[in-house]
Length: 315
Image 1 (cartoon, helix red, strand yellow):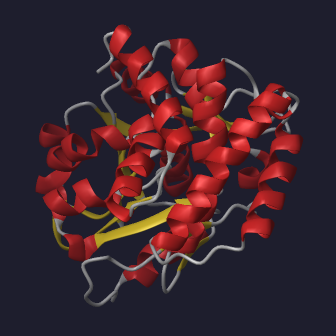
Image 2 (cartoon, one colour; image 1 turned 180 degrees about the vertical axis):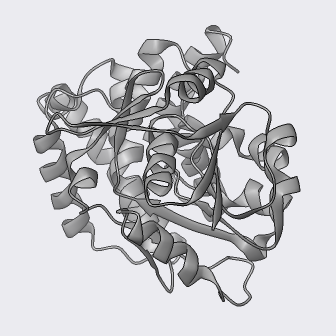
């Protein structure tokens, strides 16, 4: 199989590196010229928590219209706000039998992809795999990923139609050490992850604190609870049945285990990068209006992050 990884920061590079290591033909696509040039010149370094480094020869490009040929699968891992642009950049490589998987954070990521590439081939999903990029060309792989215990879960296309051939895609990822499965419906896992990511991420970014700092502050925890409750109410209005107690307990255990760690959104704010707030609070607020579900905490936190990005010239 031939793969394109659309968005090749930490996560995209890690997925691409694992697939190349397993013998697949992969092209990384990204706008970060420094990242792309470093990988092309020196290879991609996968750094595992046991101290082992792997250097993998991976092809990367900032010009997919020139360098990317036809592919069997596209894995989208850019920031959600860039999806329409990214989809357009790889459209020439997508054929009638190509699968396109979004395993990005947040809600609604499949919609702009489907508008450009066709709803019948876009697979919405999520993943517990994790990675961090300390410098260009170097990716630190999370322990759960290194141990082969992460899971990537995909749902069928929202546009309907057969899923013939998806097993080849999911099997390739699983065989590469990134366990993957096709679900009858991915909404529960997407919303379950959203309940953690779209609460702690925006809140720590707005407060300029770590996950540990958030849960150790009664005022911050109160805001966190409000954001969580709004997501649960909205999920119910959208017909997604979640076990509120189980999701909350899992979230709090995860936050406690993470400790003094910056969320990716907080790290984006610190580094002066545009964040994924559009796929989090902004999308939650938009859907709340459509469903008649009040989301005042997400409305406020979302406006704070958007305002910061506007003032920094990122929007």
